[in-house]
Length: 220
Picture 1 (cartoon, rainbow, N blue to C red):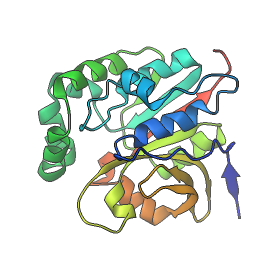
Picture 2: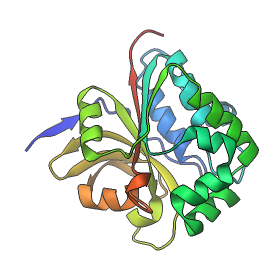
Picture 3: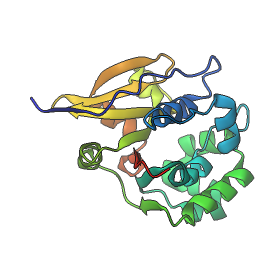
Picture 4: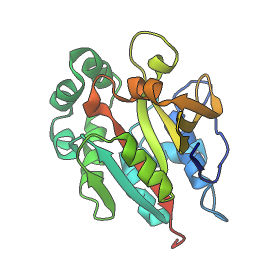
């Protein structure tokens, strides 16, 4: 059986308020940059323009990652230009009414517009506007990239509803992906079957399948 694993940066767990899964994943990424500081959750709050009680949108930090020495690539059928102009219409269109309204209610839309514009205009982040595939994940890991994916956490918990959640993928085998899930509940070096992952990833539909890929290139 083929199995590929990158260096294991170790699990970082979400905060007690469960608002910092993205922060935890970026701390894990920064651990792959040897000899450099790993930013605190507070510093990551600043870099991501975190608003307490709202969803975390990592666009500003993603735009910063090349300056921290990371080759950065996004594959997602997610039009940042449209998002930067009319986030309400965009979320309703891409997610549909139920999930779109949840996302709108949990977002600071004006701040989101600015961060989406910065990432969209970045010349150092490679952005491919289409749905990601399993083959994209495999290829990027084989190239040495760590993957962040946004999924529906409720699917992993076998619950109904929708909660946006971020996990880190650092390996795969024939059965599925090898992930760190910041939780709650957290999962350290867990193996998630391909079909279960896809249900959480392609939610509400295949257009939602996304990856953000990062590889420290040693230049910073």
